[in-house]
Image 1 (cartoon, rainbow, N blue to C red):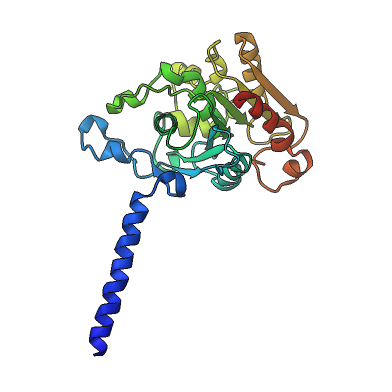
Image 2 (image 1 turned 90 degrees about the horizontal axis):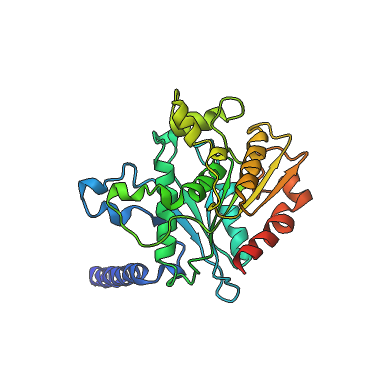
Length: 306
C-alpha cells in the first residue's frame, strides 16, 4: 500500500515537473529572465564555417522594461575589465536595472575576454551578434529597431565605440556564414571613462595586450585607436571621464572628443576634475555626489529615443 502511494506521488511529481519544464520552454523570452546564448543557433548547424570558438561563454542577460513604462528603446551594456575580465556587477547588472527602471530595455553582454584565451575579433563578434539578435527580435520584445544603443565602461567603452565606428563596414558575422538584413551598428553609444587609443603614449597597456596581443603592428595600433577611425557616419556619442583617472589616461577621451568634433559627429563630452575610474553605477562617492546617470546621462538618452 505504502509503495503504491509512493509510486502515485512520484508519478504526480514527475508529471508536474515535465509540464512545468515544457511550459518554461514554450513561454516567451519576453516574460522570462533567461540568459540568451547568442551563438546557440549558429553552433547547432554543425557547419564548419559557422564554428565559433568559445560559443558557450557569450550570452546576454535581458532586463525587459515593464510594459506600462516601456519606451521601446533598448541598450546593450558592456562591462569593463581591460578586455581581460568583466565587472558584471556595478558596470553590468546594476546599469541594466537602472535603464529598466526608466522604461529602457537592457541587455548585459557577457562577452569573451583574454582571461579565457580570446582576443580580437571575439569581442567585436559578440557585440555585433548581440545587436543582430536584439534587432531581429525587436517586434516580439516590443523594441524599436531605430532606438538601440550601447553603453560601455573602460574597455567596454572601447567596444561600444568600435561597434559604432566599424558598424556595418566590418561585418565579423559573415566569417561564420551568418547573413542578416539588419544593421549591426548601434543608434547611439555611451563610452564611460573609456579606453580609446592603442598608441603607446596614452594607450592602456593591459587592454591593448588583451585585445590585439603583445607586439601589434603599427597598422593594428592605428586600426584600434578609435580616435583615428571617426567619420561623419559615426552614431551620436555620450562621453564621460575624469581628469584624475588613475587607470585610463583621460587624454583618451580628449582625443576622441577632438576626433568627433572634427568629423562633425553629434556628441556630448563631460570632463570632470575628480571622480577617478570604475565608478559605474555603484554606490561610490562619485555616483552619490554627482548622480551622473540621472542628471547627465538620462536627459541625453531621452533625446536620442524620443
